[in-house]
Image (cartoon, rainbow, N blue to C red; front, top):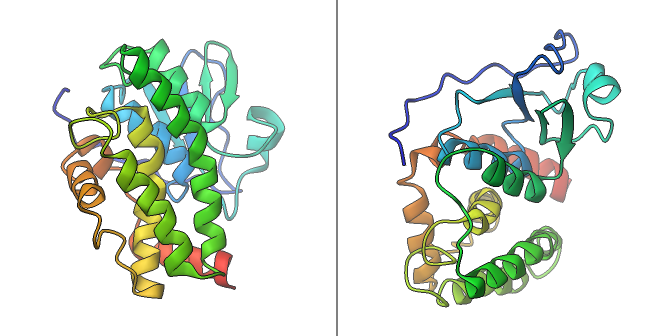
Length: 233
């Protein structure tokens, strides 16, 4: 992977911001720095070295511009990708789209067994996120623990620190959520998700060595503030 130059991140656009040009030949990733779904596609872009090919357009989700829904992407969610005269959405689909339509290292293995397992883990990611969020109002240690045990077990299937052995879209699908949940659980519930889970601890440690990921990490204080308001308010 090419060495990464620290990217100067553009400011988030709010309701007063002008709309960037649409369909002028520039590929744009509409994102939000706080959003874990958008972070999936942002990491994929970075890892493939596409900083010059895919321009970030960050939005302020708490005061988003009307033109985004009206003219760019009617579901009014991030991420979305403007490419080849159309705008497409849904983070798991977009990760695969960026991986297959652009240059840079492939993030899905050729091995059929690994591909099959990749699909299983990707389709489980929504279940993982849903169970984690409901755990905040239930028996948190037990319910959240079961989800992190799932990842700990999954990390034992192949040799190497990542879910398929080497880094792939599967890891990138999970890390934005694990990042936020781990901060929130430690701060609010005093639960350390890595305790007794050496594979998970090593996985997080490996990710923290990857520049493509490090540049996308959310502000932990903001995560705690937003999650406390949203899930415990």
